[in-house]
Picture (spheres, rainbow, N blue to C red):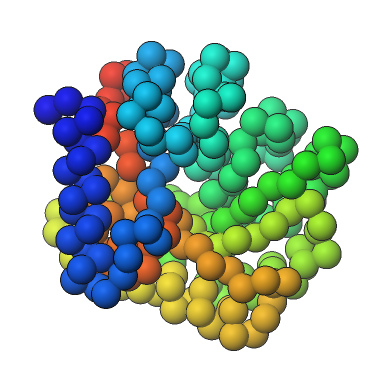
Length: 230
C-alpha cells in the first residue's frame, strides 16, 4: 500500500469514528510521527500534504529539521531533558511532553530569550504505569497554577499515552479519563484560556481516541512505516 493510500485509509477511519461519536473530521489533526524513518521518507509525508511532523529524538530530528523544517510544523513528542530545551526552541512549535516545573521554567527562559512562544500539552499519566512519564491526574491543577505566570509558554491541552492493548477498546477508559480531566480543569479556569486540545491516540487505538475527544493523533507506523530501530 502506498503512502497516499495509507493516508486515505486513515482519513476514512477517522471520518467513520467521527460519525459514530457525533464529531466533525475537521476537529482532528494528524501528527505524522517520523521518528523511525529517514529524511527522504519524511519529505514524502510532507509532499502528501501532512504538514505536522512528530519527532522524539533530537539527534535524529536535528538533521531532518535542517533539511525540511521550513516546510512543516514540528512537534516534539518525546520526553524532553531540561538541558536539551535549547535545541527545541525555534524548531519545534509544539511540545507534547510538559511534565515538570523545571522543564516549564527552562522552556519559558529560552523562549523569552528568543522572543518566541511554545505551545505545550501537559503530559498526564492516566494509566498510572510506572514506566510512563507524566503527572498524576491529581497533580495537574497545582502544576497549572505554578506555571500560570509563564508568559512564553501556552498550555493548549493535555497529552497521554495509553498502554498497548490487543483490543483497542480496552484503552477507552484512559482516553475518557483525559477528556474528563481536561473538562474539570477548564471548569476551574486554571489557564488564561480554556484548554481545547487532547493529544492522544496512536496507530493501534486512534479510532477509540477520536470517539473520546482526541484533537491531535500521533500516528507513526500506520502511516509511514518503520525503517530503522529505535
